[in-house]
Image 1: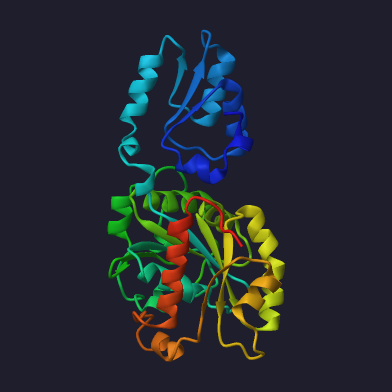
Image 2: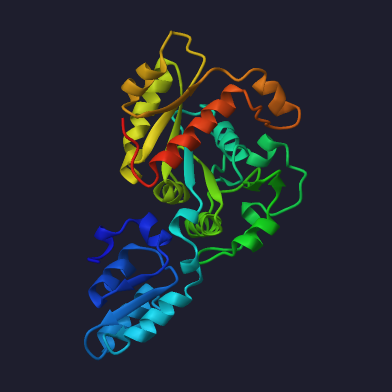
Length: 322
């Protein structure tokens, strides 16, 4: 490879192993976070420059080729993720509201409830997804309790430590607190994906460092836009910033439409591909107040969430097309 310009942050994190020459190792060390299973290779006897680059990028070894080709092959074979086909990695979705109060947290939770997912709360001002799901009394870790700052996290250990709603594992924020650490965010998302679990991240609109990590690592970014003019204007303003982080982005249009805007109109105004549209969810507010979100099989929420999962699984890993 020719350095970080040839490899996205998502690709860097998702790769089973990375083999670099010295120049590429220096560039990756400057531009990308540390990750395991990195090897630096040379064609001559390694010198101080090679070892400095290897240390900077966190490489496990510096290997001279072709002399150490067998050692490199053995190291790659021992990478335990290598036994998992890439198609077995969990998908990653990031959900963000086109405006405040658009319903991004509800839709993120609905997506998770329609799949055996890890639901990650990245909005420190959202009150906590455990309240939305009615699990505030359930024991388990929340973001302030999570000690990981970066590096590899065991999915089995994480799943056992977090609260669950049915088949959904939830990493919620607390009532008060700042943005999650971006290194920890990356470690948590990658742990779920490496474990073959879909990950759904509820991303704040203020584009924190953790939000950028979640957006950048997503196979698909879902922007929620209510079907009214002000929401369309706000979403159109936000969309370029989101697309700059991850071009695989589309819009879900949420009714009602007080001015008669159609979903296609909203997509045209926001200049985002239309992923799904949904009618208002009956009695949603009452259900959230009286025990947490549930998603009925034939509800508008379920239909829209199912449609987004279908789009992702049909198009992964390619971009969303208009």
